[in-house]
Amino acid sequence: MLNHRDGRTDNRSMTIASDEFPQAAPAAAAAPAVADMPVLLPTREALLERIGDQLPGSAEQPVTLLVIGLLRRDDGWPTPHTTLTQVTSLLARSVRGDDWLGASGAAEFGIVLAGPAETAQIVGARLVAAVDALGIPGLSASAGIAPLTPELTAGEVFRRATLSLTAARRVGAGTVIRYREPV
Image (cartoon, rainbow, N blue to C red):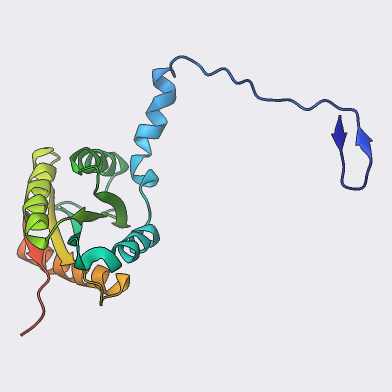
């Protein structure tokens, strides 16, 4: 029996979902979730929010933003969904439990790493090499790094990392560049 806001009573029955769960999902049901892996990543807005959350404590515990961008030597069309899925899966398997992975652009990934920029440089080099090792013809990657400091905004940290990524892309595949203040 359903009660409406106006006091009327409806005698229709309401269906309640079963509390029994299937033992295992069929393989076909699992495939779409894997195929949509890049879509499931947190967005750039969520990445900026995560950076903002990490900024206040970055003076005591170093935190660094690593942005990995894909490079392609082909027709320039958007990166195929299957390629993005493979790269997303690789990066998701490669980050540590206290790191955070999100999308920062169409073919870019942002990773908020617990640790100093030196660690991010090592991780970045390892990850861009791993993208190359996927063996996808014409696909490579570069990375930009920007350390978080409490006096910066999330937008400024992101700008610095993407500026470094742009410079790394210009140098070429496999390059990792860390943001440094101009002298």
